[in-house]
Image (cartoon, rainbow, N blue to C red; front, top):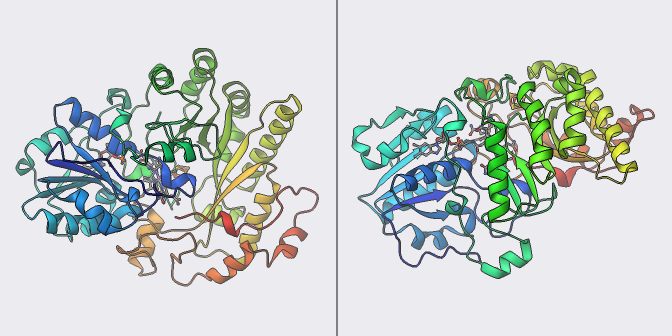
Length: 467
Ligand code: B12
Ligand code: SF4
């Protein structure tokens, strides 16, 4: 099945290239690969609202660089949102674009530009590199790039309330047409169903920046704090999308949805009354579930929060401390038992029970076999769970990532930030042990420590995700 973009002749001289692994939108495999990019959506919306038309192509919608080539030719300017995990395709695309359009300009921004500007600057093809937010600079930058130095700091809105509603029709459009539509029930520009709730799926952001400082993430150290969108704005957008395209379920892409109790209380009040009460995916933390259990339970019961993403990461206090996770084994057990009970209660009433989307990291430097066994025991305690297990990846921007990169222990390079789920990411970690563990080799030992509470069954090797 091919899935090409319908760009017969370019409308504009400016191209925005959506980035990701080749083929991710041709043969969507898992939930991660198919999501649309809100950074791209927001900035293209702002450009178009200011009279600057751009074309769109995507590395995810082709299966080879040869196939992409004709879509890159004939432009004066290329724009890209570069994250660390999309740095390798960005690099390759930039070189190809310059070969095809020698007098063109390439303007890049995004998380990788923010946290690893030295790596971006080392690529001569990037003519302008924007660190940080782009919403307040993108129009001036595209109109007059020469007014900006090569590397510069962008400017963010003070609150997400200032962001325009994304024009989702500016997201990459599959031209595979009815075949794609029928096979994947894809109601573009809504997104694909991935097992979290019925399609068409609306992804949305209500907040930006999680205030915690886990050493493998701590985005608050590089993303400027900004005000949350109001509950009314979020509800208006969802209802608008439903009227225009139809909404089956919602994915709230916030790093941390379960924060700011006053906002959540308003959501609890309005979402069930003013929307169709679609089920949704959203993220929380085990310690705050324990801190605000009543609010949490009310949200699950009344607002249909049915896929609860929690970054448990580890089942061992030793590792949780090392990660500065600020939650502990007891918090994890509390949250798991609460969601198990809530699930039983809702199921008994004939309602859909909530599931965990459980983020787990293995291969954290310093982790012992027993730490990893504890993590597997924690996972088996969850009655209804979609495990999302990854090998720890030392991303630049995070404290632990910077440290391992500086010590020369990171195996992630600019050519290979991440490719396959079981890629080895850090020197000195015994990955074979983890592969064996996920394949069930140590199950006797893991199960011995489980005592009475055990729900998860078996092998987890197939749930390893790209990281
Ligand atoms: C939603 C999300 C996802 C979603 C969807 C991704 C998608 N298609 O967009 C999912 C769940 C799939 C996902 C997965 C992953 N993610 Co993610 N994700 C996010 C999250 C929470 C929000 C992204 C977003 O929409 N932001 C809002 C938009 C508006 O911001 P933005 O894209 O950065 O764009 C702004 C600026 O960067 C700038 N800008 C962007 N482009 C350009 C271009 C120009 C020219 C200019 C001037 C400016 C500019 O302006 C924009 C507006 O201010 C961020 C954290 C965050 N708070 O941003 C993490 C984040 C981007 N993810 C991250 C990571 C590590 C991952 C994973 C590898 C995690 C994992 N271990 O599995 C996977 C990899 C996925 C893959 N493809 O393989 C990291 C990236 C770190 C880095 N150094 O790049 C982040 C920052 C989280 C973190 N703190 O670690 N992710
Ligand atoms: S891992 Fe989760 S809780 Fe920790 S800083 Fe990142 S988003 Fe926040």
